[in-house]
Amino acid sequence: MNTETTTTARERFYRRERRSVPAAREFTRAALTDWGVTGDPYDDVLLCVSELATNALLHGVPPGRGFLLRLLPYEDEVRVEVHDSGDGSPQVADVRGESGRGLFLVEALAGKWGVEERDPGKTVWCTFSRRG
Image 1: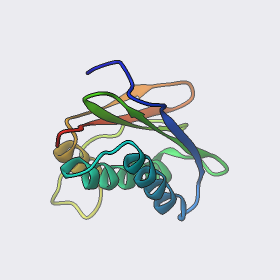
Image 2: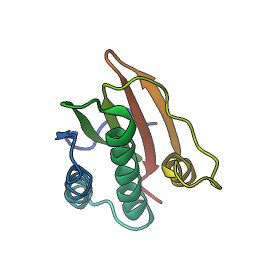
Image 3: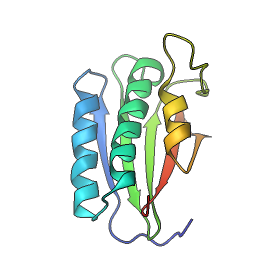
Image 4: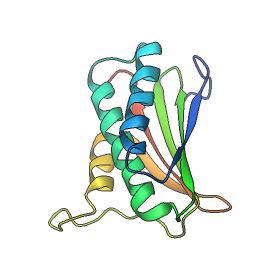
């Protein structure tokens, strides 16, 4: 990963409410457009932001709290981070189950993904090549 950002990172805090997921997607759409990200990674980034934001709301954000979405534009890739204050470490679920497919999609679409501990909570991140 190239550690040099091509422009300023963007971040926004979202409350624990249903409308936060589409708001996070729109925030991401505007950032990607401003950064000139097009083609294959564009839709993949938007889908993964939706999945990570949904996971944060369902599993990682205690009542009365929220999550932070941070987007980092690097020369060769875009990094998405969702910071929440919940316990536990997300795992990729069995795709045959009725729920839990969000991280399966992230794993399939992103170049890399992972979970980092923070106090309190965790950061779930993923990266996408700017070249698709």
